[in-house]
Amino acid sequence: MRVSNRHIGNRGVTLIELLVALAIAAILIGAGIPSFLSMIQRSNIDGATRQVMYEIRTVQNLAVTRGGVFGFHWGADPMVGMATSVYRVERDPSGICAAPPNGWPAAGATTATVCADGAPCVIRDWFDLVTEYTGVTIQSVTDGSGNPVGGVMFNSRGASLNNCGVVTFPVRVTVVDTSGATRIIRVERAGRVFIQ
Image 1 (cartoon, rainbow, N blue to C red):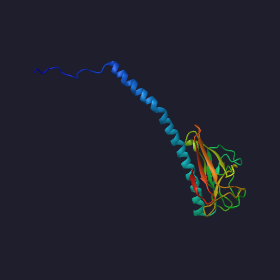
Image 2 (image 1 turned 180 degrees about the horizontal axis):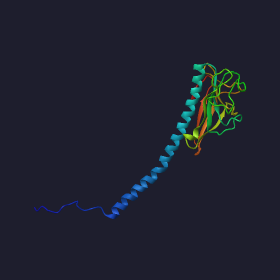
Image 3 (image 1 turned 180 degrees about the vertical axis):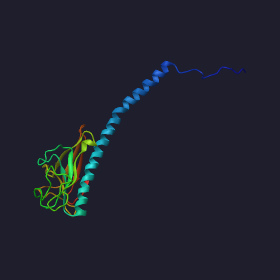
Image 4 (image 1 turned 60 degrees about the vertical axis):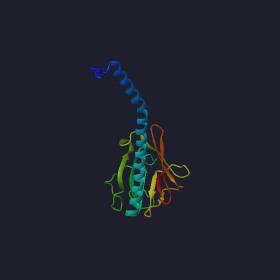
């Protein structure tokens, strides 16, 4: 038997092999980009929905811990006329939906504004979801009958109410993104807040 002295495997990569490998890699990357972008979009709307739900729960917590009526006020409320992606956290020291300065703060009020009782009326200034979640907005805030409402309010027992008009429960806060994906936050009369 004769053993060969030839070195096997010293051959380099040809240009054609390199181009085929690059073409395969490009195809795999190109096929993955749409699903990756879709995943980012879903993450965006899910994050924004959790943010809004967190703010609503914060309002409820403030109402219970500080006592009184606190609200999550939507910027597209006709009384405010701001963008649909905007909201703020505020309180009504009157508890009866009175006009400023005795009740809900005026649209231009800030955290520096104090109500007639000497305490701040605005807990969190107007916040725009778009600054953190591109393309996401609050499409609507509606009651159980589908009627638009300006936001969500809670009393000192943590129950949801609307002392500014007749509202049927549950209240629904609908969050949407530019792709049309929708998430709904549901607020029940007893104060339960969750994503549907």
